Image 1 (cartoon, rainbow, N blue to C red):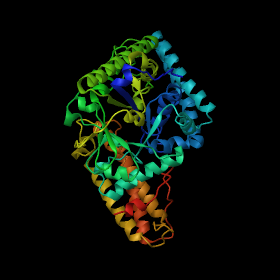
Image 2: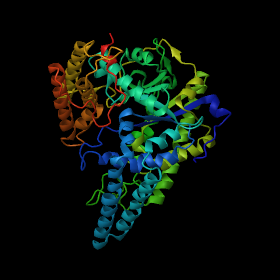
Image 3: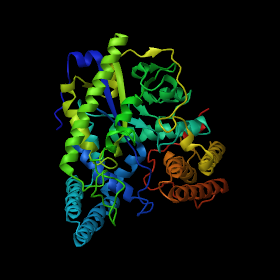
Image 4: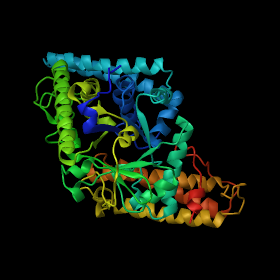
Length: 506
């Protein structure tokens, strides 16, 4: 347990800190291995999601678990879990041993010692996973089931950039498929919704209201200014859902790649690697000192809490009312990209009270403040430079055009099939259309454009997108031909709660 207790007094008078942990992974299970593919998932499970079970026990934070991440985690009770264990035992363990041997033979004994220590992380993950019987999703469900502890956010089915979708039906398909899967897995519809990449344009709040959403996060840094007090003021939209601005001046304390905490020289260097991509050096270039780095992470957590307390105190002093400081972070930053990130997080959770900071899940934090009315929201994202450039530019034109063309063709085909061999509720009962819809959802993932724009995964994102286009086109051809030999409607475990009716809505 992290020992968190809710503070009283000045902390709650000044407002609350809402930590939002955004957990997401593109659908890679079963789609390739090294260097790009499902080993990304195995690494995240081992270094982030399994350790998170202990770190977040009883913690009053907001945890986003995207549907597409859960689609994959859900498969770990079967063959995917066996592959994960094989990765731990047959890849990670021997590679650590081999690189440690090589470092010793080269006279780098301190580096070899660090590699052997780091191998213990994977041994712990293997034991934890085996103890769960592979049911990581069940363990996450238990984590969020109590009256205290993390609160869940819902999201779109495959993390699509909703403003880039061509039709209202396409947007509804992403939203409804994601929320339906969430409800089946966790027993309720989430009150909050994570807009993928915080990508917002006017009108999305209408669809979110239609889906029962009460709150969502937005990035208004460009519109309001970095550090503006308005960043601590939720905004009630005319449609009803409350837009919660994220405070980038707080997020940047952790996230900024040049000045954020993880850039400190004492932390483990993510980029300095051995023959088999292991990391025994720190950002200074010296041998990594794990205990010293953990101590630094605790210091940085205390600095973070002090700054949050000051930010909330300044708001209270100037506005005369409590504010809501919303700080979202990618969960994979904490343990994977920033190796010491979960030590930082555990310290934040354990010492918030001592710094006069009230930590609350997003819905509870919203109960403590009165949203402002009548403030217009600007189109935005939390990407660089706070617009949609990462996902909509000449560099990724092939991806954007393919996704929009496929969406329009699927909407047309689904509308044409309405009432023909339909189910009792009027939705098309066509396996080929279901398969085409799942291929579309996979194609719409924001990850392919992100990886391509940042040049992070060679040809993998384009290869994945092109493969989904081919399968989608084949499924649509089968649907139009009205053939008895229709494709399997499933795409591994992607979007298991798919319903085509949102495509038919006006």
